Length: 128
Length: 147
Length: 337
Image (cartoon, rainbow over all chains, first blue to last red; front, side):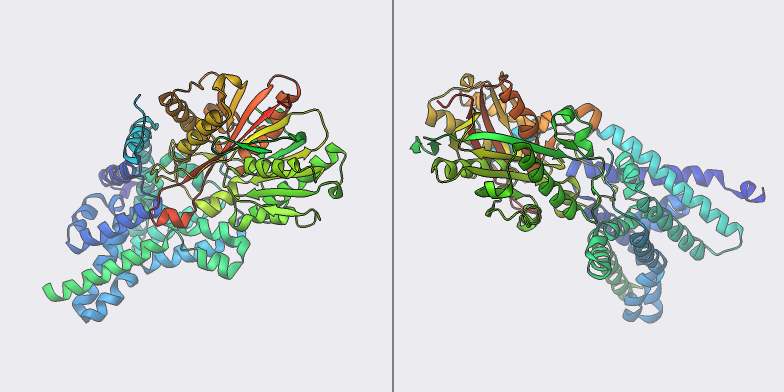
């Protein structure tokens, strides 16, 4: 029960609202511009890198927690944060290493789980 | 209606005649599902920090868990149903990135594990890595000169 | 056979459509025309390992069903004309691989079925052959895989997008028989009014349908009310209403007797198919399963059957090209004319 008492419900609400709002931006892009999902993902991750690089996105993360880190904007911001931190220590070499290093968990997980899924699953039609 | 002769006239006519996406309903669905996915992430995050992990590890665990859940739902043929309902709500969070890697891996299984699964895995999500990583390297290099 | 007007051929020896057969997938089996088809599948794979193999099997079994129904064997068929949507027409190639029937592979995108009827009836008009086979197929899953996205991708379909029909339809044209006869053929010209949205095929193909429709009326001197029914292949709900609008601006009112196979095959509200059905299999199954039987029963005596196709692939889409459309028409009548 200690864990449930420790949850910051104010943060959870902010997380829900900010995460939801970021998705609404994506939905408007889909419906208004007819961008395919691959393009939407590229737009979000690139904007995330820019916001992260400008140092703006960390305020959103402080405010909303996973509401900011879970959307792909956060993935982009994390790439930028890693690259900048690492660059400040190792210079240009760090710029190459830091981004992927900071996001390695997510990328590796997606590749690994994708491979596992292809071993067990069979494609199926959308019943819609 | 006047006779349509040029491509411009026709495109304008078609644009006006085509049914529009129900954008308000779509946005509501995206908000609810997107918010829910982020909140699940937040709960995982809080549990990790409660167990004494630092923020960076906790964020990694959130990402890996959500990716794992998306991969499972994709394999079970459920993610596309969620995606149809939620639109950007399941696409924009990291779950959409995971789904876009897992779904071609499953679809192209019939072409073998190397040239099917291995190479087609990145047909949708490859550009995300290309642009995300390239942009982060640029940002890192620029930061060398300013900081 | 003689050419009348600009593009139309009037056949001197109109072939009979001797028999037809159709097999459809699970979604079509839940649609309004389900009871018309020879066989309804409950599994898109039909026991095969890939979508492509499944589509070839549907094609092959449709041809076998047709031969069995007609009491013919493969050696009674002089020539076959067939096509589908997959690269290099593999569904028909592999479907016909073991048939030992001389084979012409055609590509006219979704217009292929009527393209096959056109060429087949010209062969028949020569009186050199007894029976000619025309068949096409499409499969939702193989088409999505080739043209769009993996099935498991969680994306939304736009309201103008169409649902590729899983199924195959086949017809035998014959020298002997009591009709319905193919009396005129009007091949279409490629028409492009600059639509680029690959999820709005109906709008991309409607101008081609208009062009062929008007050519047909001008060449034959007929008017829309000559026909009991004018049926297009897969313009869908949006394309259908666009064609009615466009025809009106040219002085032809087709709203009374016009319908579209993409509209007929699915129940838009219940099946969530957005703008309707599409694919080579759409007009092939609806004609073979539904319209042909209406003609045999005498409910339709004069039919203008017009299949529409979008002549593009995903490379041209990515390169920003607009979508050229084509439409081929045949008039099918119970009287030789």
